[in-house]
Image (tube, rainbow, N blue to C red; front, side):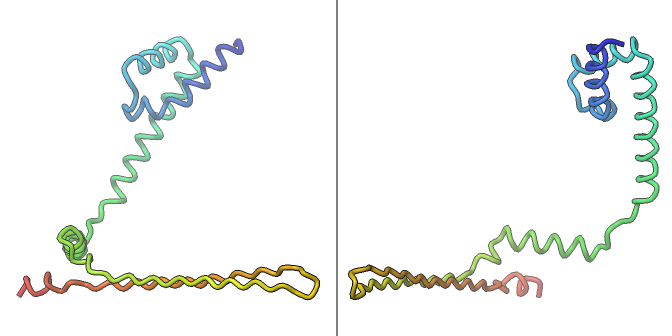
Length: 136
């Protein structure tokens, strides 16, 4: 097998999942399928990958079939609805910033410069309870 063929095989191997899941355009899929028909090693590897992918999907379908509780659905819906209607938009933000600069000159004429910055930000959010009163 030439270095060119090995390079082509590596590109094909990296494209298997795209082909298996159908996330590849038609010309690329045809190129891969053409290579698979001419290369028994890649064809065997592709068959193995497709089988493993199918088995994994089947196992996931059988084991991950729990449904979320209705209360969870309702809670998520209410939170999204509250955000979309602006229930969480009331907020107060206060910012304070102060910079103190001191310059001192000592007896030798050397300048000492100090700068102290104090910053404080406070954010307060109020929950608009009007959505709760609509339920009554």
